[in-house]
Length: 157
Image 1 (cartoon, rainbow, N blue to C red):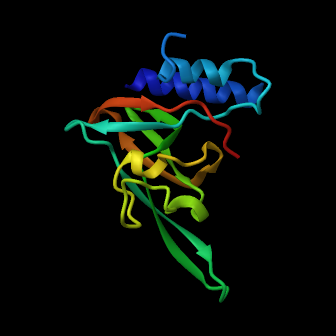
Image 2 (image 1 turned 45 degrees about the horizontal axis):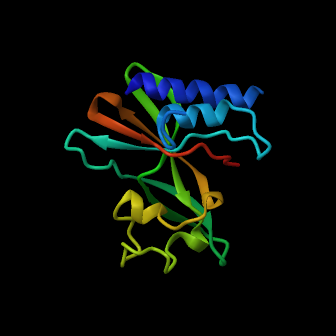
């Protein structure tokens, strides 16, 4: 697990400075580093699975300014992450989300409530360009995870 995350982190850092499967960690790393006429990709989003094989869901908190210009809290829940750093078998992960105006659209076939209930509920039918950084980072112990699913490489601003 740590080796895969290190490879993703290395590839993401490399593009900042400068096929066996259609969707896999190896394929996503190759997409990130490969030459393309599309906008340069800079992120490999991924889903982690806990020891009980359940997708890992994280919640973080940020703030925003409301119409009344008062600062308010906002909770963000996500199954989708971006690696930021690795040290001592721990990883710093940034939560990724779908842009708010489309986050809970009627396109979500599997979710009836506004809570994010599964990775597929969060991203199924959503535009790839609507995936965005949240700026919310968490630190996790990598020994708590047994599997990783890499999504295709994307360009996040």
